[in-house]
Picture 1 (tube, rainbow, N blue to C red):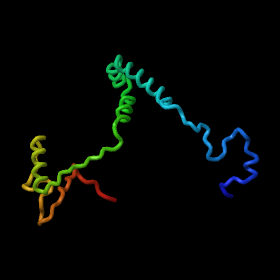
Picture 2 (cartoon, rainbow, N blue to C red):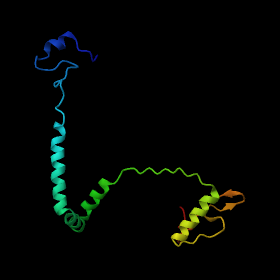
Picture 3 (tube, rainbow, N blue to C red):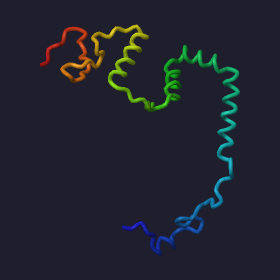
Picture 4 (spheres, rainbow, N blue to C red):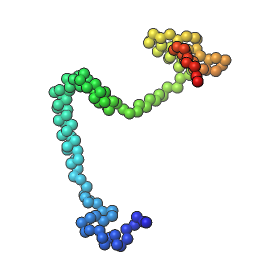
Length: 137
């Protein structure tokens, strides 16, 4: 079967239907017509928020925390892309980590910090188990 209509298809097509490639509205929609409803809705919503916004948010947070969290999640960006233009050496990075740790009042052991060189190679610190490790079967 092919997608190209044959003469029989053209004869069976009612007169009131559009022919392939023909638009039902060749001039398009009037400029701004689609946005009128959206603009009116946003204006009404803004006016209502100005009057009741903070109290409503507080009431929803207390009475319907699940809905409150849905709203918060819906306005957050789905993806956060972090880029930096700074290219730091290992020593500069270690110094920054120590400065941040000091600001957060954290203790970092060893002279090399988290990426302390062992035998000339930088290694990530190994996590320590929180309790006894269960046997593997």
